[in-house]
Amino acid sequence: MDFIVNTPAQLGEMLSSARQAKGLTQAEAAARIGVGQSRLSSLETTRTASLSLSQLLELTALYGLELSVRTKDGRDAADIDW
Figure 1 (cartoon, rainbow, N blue to C red):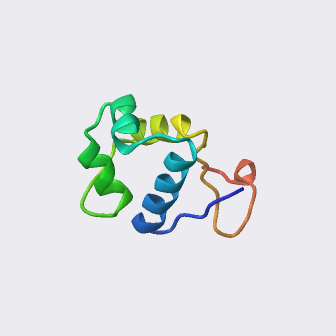
Figure 2 (cartoon, one colour):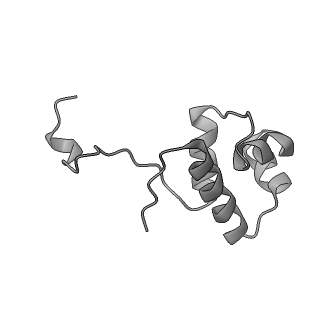
Figure 3 (spheres, helix red, strand yellow):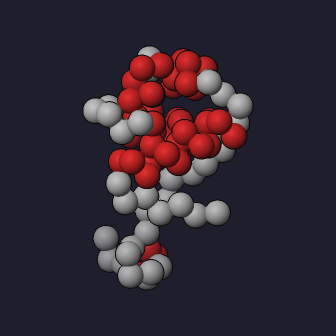
């Protein structure tokens, strides 16, 4: 299933749901990617928090997710001259 994320709130909600589906506590997930539980909590509840790109990729992998970027108009990324 694809999740379209346009806001920090949507990302936080999606990550929280994925973490819970994996049966992980915030403390367990945070420890696995090297951040504090309070930082992960802030990310999930959209208080001021940030993760590095590598931490976000580690978190999505931990939850069995992958990060994908696509064009809004639906064009295949391979057809775009980046």
